[in-house]
Image (tube, rainbow, N blue to C red):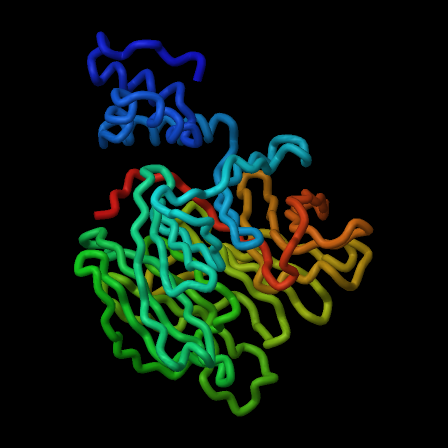
Length: 390
């Protein structure tokens, strides 16, 4: 901040935007806006946002780092990750997400990223908030809880119409006693309203493994609604929801045979590909696969996994390193996977990032005490955007 000029009044607007975009980190933008009226107005222009975000991408590429959004203990944090640093410095907390117009502390039970926007599902409240941390424009959305809510839990996803770029939210209620979905509803930002969605299907969303947004659509693991022999493998597949056509697509294959006791988790790679973490229950062998091509109605996998390690051999333990449903991301250049889960040592339970290399290396980063043992740390990639919420 000390490198900023003291007075922009004599500079042409284009030059002022150029200077400000090069010296202000994305995480310092809120402080810049509160400095003076001139900087506040300048920093909210679309032309400035375009230059600023382009500069941020160049800087991140040079430093070989990227940003993640992490939810721990019902709070949301922005994290900066650089796997080229020493282990103790590779994951740094940049700040806590604050909603500008919220009068009280907000607790979040789920967070979902799409196109630079965060969909936050609040804890103990029938409200959602969609928020662009870069622009600072939250939108609060209420939803109705019917009697079925006492029997289950609502789940949500965020996407957009690829033709108009208008955003939508899909909501469905999970009836826990039947492990199935009772209803589907969709919220349209343009109409500011919810409406019922008629869905005919012969499968069930695997509700305890979260979905992932990619190119405006959402992908989940799904299973046969009814199976004559549920202990058999190959019962699981991927299903996608196309927010443009507002329909679910066909079953999409996984690159391995899966059994119900095995571990599964989804992630995205640069908002271009899907990655799936697969851990065998009997051997603890962990594999990560990445798609080579993906569209709403079809996808293909490489002939070889991105990474494969035997966690039992790697750690010398038969416990603790079970990653079913855990959040993760991969660094393609370094051939590294980072899995976020709960760890345990002599000092108690703590949120942990497990850094696993193709060469069989394992490093751990302690992210702080885990106050809720039933809530895993949740991580998703975050790419700042100038997307405006109307």
